Amino acid sequence: MSKGLIILIIVLVVLIAAVVALYFLGKRAQKRQQEQEAQLQAYKQTVSMLIIDKKRMKIKESGLPQMVIDQTPKYLRWTKLPIVKAKVGPQILSMVCDEKIFDDVPVKKEVKATVSGIYIIGVKGLHGKQAPKEEKKKSRFKQMIENLQEKAGAKPISKNR
Image 1 (cartoon, rainbow, N blue to C red):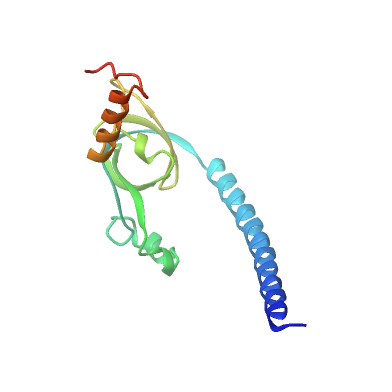
Image 2 (cartoon, rainbow, N blue to C red):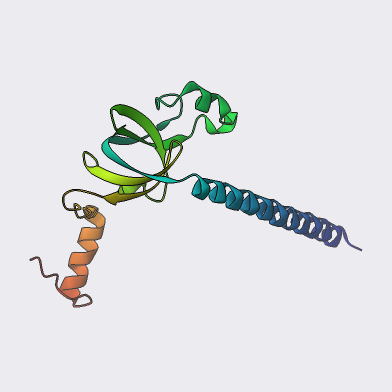
């Protein structure tokens, strides 16, 4: 056998072992996530609250209770979390928001929120109209490309002109 073939076989064996290990680790992580989701759903309750502010900030700067900060793993203390500051009854609380709904949370509005402990799972507007989401501004490069496409006839002319 040549050296190249031996090296190729060793690399393939290592890659196969890595794929198998990642498969089992992923399966275990998925099972753990399902258990946590079931636990959140078991303790959820609907609360009326006024959203004061929302930001992504590090857990040490968030204003969460010290006990929560101490329980977080060391490697997660430097990541930024979606934090919502809300008035629930007479208290002003800092709460962690679900990443999926963080962009939908209206600021300075009263909402009905589904809460599990200090974790906001869902939000529904209570008073007033929902503000339409603002479209992101296009970069100059994309604007230039659109203009060139319109001039070439490759794209229909936009209605706002």
